Amino acid sequence: MKTQSPLKILLAEDNSGDVFLVRRALQKHQIDCDLTLIKDGEAALRYLSEIDSGDPGGCPDLILLDLNLPRCPGSQVLEALKNSPTCQEAPVIVLTSSDSPHDRAKATRLGAVRFFCKPTDLAGFMALGEVVRDVMSSR
Image 1 (cartoon, helix red, strand yellow):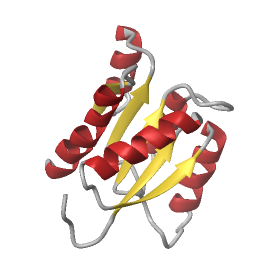
Image 2 (cartoon, one colour; image 1 turned 90 degrees about the vertical axis):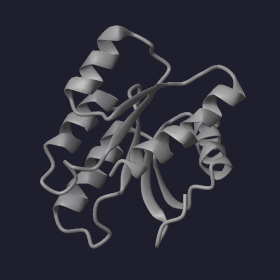
Image 3 (cartoon, helix red, strand yellow; image 1 turned 60 degrees about the horizontal axis):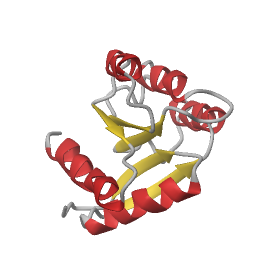
Image 4 (spheres, one colour; image 1 turned 45 degrees about the vertical axis):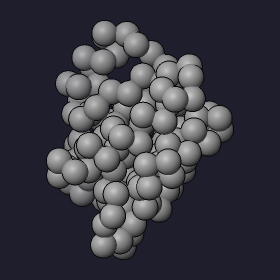
């Protein structure tokens, strides 16, 4: 994906193995990005609050959000994002190990544009890059 400048992507994920795989998927699909990593829900809420308070960095172009974050669930972070005056339009891709229809419905209701169930194999995880490309090309 070639853009004028790198995409600003926020990754809220506490599992270092999954962070590695997200990075690899983005690289594999040649997505030029600046990735900001946040490892828990409380830190994600603070980050959002700073943006809403006028942080010059502004809102990310895309948010990759794990639902199972420590300290504050990803669903609460998603709700805060969609109520944010600054970031409510930013697309959110939910990353989760849950394939629960309830979790999928809740994420969709709260405004996630995609629900990516973390696969157990490398090839499946690499498909995340294509999901990111699809979401960003539709904007």
